[in-house]
Length: 434
Image (cartoon, rainbow, N blue to C red):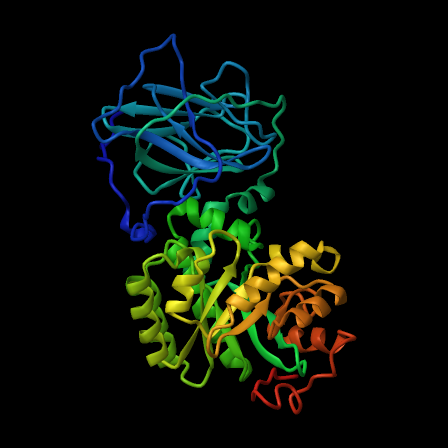
């Protein structure tokens, strides 16, 4: 049998190549395939074929470097790549390298081998960006440099459960999410201490897709796909689309990702959103740790304020607090990290004095201080006494779909009942009740 050989290349149809940015940290671990008995493939100057995926049982993010001309994948001891899944057969599939080209073939497995969700019945060529599904375990094909060897445990018996596998193909689910814009925004209220009026809603990402329901899973998968920037931009778009369709007049606090460039990614996306949603008050949040280049942040602040968008610095105090930089470019809102607020009502007097000093130092002109992560009445009372202007946390409401946010506020015993008529009388902020 002969095959048409494909050179390693990215398939543009997947549409996920434009955000391959360097990462500030690594989540998970990397692995090599290593076999001493058979000839190995040294790779090329460009690197080696690599499978990237989440391996059971813990679904840890792993990189598997292919170093053999023939590599058998399965659950049995002695195969080249052991996968600890009951759905994977003992000898499930084979990866074949021919020069710089990679093929995959099924070895008569129970649950099948797939390339981009199509079951393979003969040796099938794969290219960079393709997905190989070994039963319920999904890998993305890359062509990168190798690292060290780590072993994988195996199980003993194959379970034929085809109906479960689709939900385990998280990478394909993520592609569907991006294509269908299947991000479901949740909103958490931000209230003013002095009169308990609702000031705004922070938009947080959720998804109905199996395996991608939480922000952590969403952005861990985005990291694997090199799509953190694209996902962050999509989250902002969906937050405003939903808020606009509901008719809310609240300020919507929008997040950014550390990998986003302020002039290249954040500002252009905000300019588009302002043009599309001119009626919605917006606040863009920057992580305090990202405020290192004062000049670039100053230029960005001027640009977004020119769009009538307010600026917030998020997670203040989580790392190295840059008060001088913050004072040079005062934000409209400064959000103190929840780690400083948690159990503050039970903290030592020294801890309280330290937080009081930070509050006093951060009182820039026209900057509103927000205490994040308030979960109890005791924490709320101490934060009010320390001089915080606003509050956010589970005590005032958990992140929820927009239609549930008003109900949560009404159920909070320490707040007055909020309705479309009396919410934000001073601020003009309103969550629709229908």
